[in-house]
Amino acid sequence: MSQKYELTYLPAKGKANLIRLMLADQGIPYKYTEYDRANWPAAKPNYPFKQLPVLTVDGSIQIAQSHSIARYLAREHGLMGSNSIEQAQVDMWLDQTLDLRNRLLNVVHIDFEKLLQPFLNSLPDMLEIFETRLAAQPASAKHLALGKLTIADYALFDVLYYLQLLRPESLDNTPVLKAFYTEFAARPKLRAYMETDEFKCLRATGSPHLQ
Amino acid sequence: AMSSNTYELTYFPVKGLGNMIRLILEDQSIKYKFNLITKDTWADFKPTTPFGQLPVLTINGKTKISQSHTIARYLGREHGLMGSNNIEQAQIEMWIDQTIDIRMKFLRMIYENYEAGKQPFLESVPALLEPFEKQLASQEDRTHLLLGKITLVDYIFFDLLLALVALSPSCSDSLPSVKAFYEAFGGREKIAAFLNRDDIKEAKFTGTDHL
Picture 1: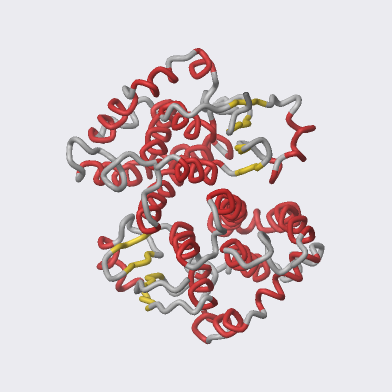
Picture 2 (picture 1 turned 135 degrees about the vertical axis):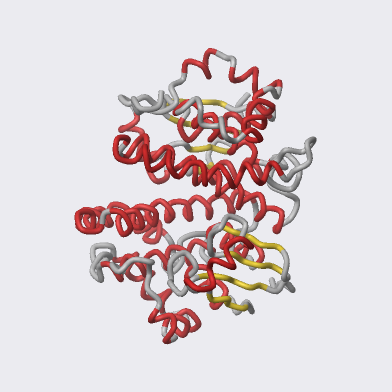
């Protein structure tokens, strides 16, 4: 039986991690295909923008760009609000979180030596926005948008995962974020996925600075 | 579709990330109030924004949406510029994401590495624009990127080209379809009128002295 979704990427968690965490936690089946450094160059022309990740829907419709894939799947699976204003409210928190993730990945990929310290210096201010937001939510509903689970929460969990990989003490001064991370990581399907060999053995990025 | 919402757009007196939003509003004849923030008024206004950043779109006097592309996507959905289903929306969004990648490279160069980075960046522009060139050349109507009609990505791509052409007027000379798109879109009556306003002509592209 062919899958509705096929996610294609390179051998790393990278920009696909957010998508895979969400699919696992939501129990959404998908086929995962991976190129390695050797066979990717020849395959590039088959993909829009010659980049990965790409989501292939119903065997032929290709959606590129990890943010767009995340938003598409979120809309399909009730994780993006129920109307246009709600979608915008989720979207802005998703954008803000992805900004932080992309900055972190830029440090790792563009110029680690030069960019790491400025990034770490700016981190408290960047995390403050999320810390304040979650602190203002009721104890039973620690979510970034709409008072309920949305794609923005998965994006936040994903970036906090990477931050703690980079610096284990990253969340020491943000107790609400730390608690959010611990609670989210305990979600049964998510935890099961993160305990698989596939997840554990997959390096974080292709850079030696974040493995 | 005409919306009954009231909109206020708050931004600085630069083109920056607010210009593309104004192109949409102006070209689609969407009524809005423009709230100009200067260095003097920013300190007081900043705490009222979701992330301490501009632009912000205030809807019906109360809902504040931050993040320029989130605002653009919201307006796109409200005004029939995002296709007719989730897949079309995703395809429009992925092309928008591709413009964001180029815009971010452009902004990093302008803000962080102008002297050494300008020439290498300009040399990279034809390759960066190649997917857009191919896409436009493949359309029957070459004045629009997707779906044979105007969509949100046309506004955003045009806005990106405004900045690139300001940096180097000949940057699209080797890309005939992009150049034709740029000229056709810039010839749209309301777009031309807006860009010809004194205050818009005077508004720099960035907060730097370089552009």
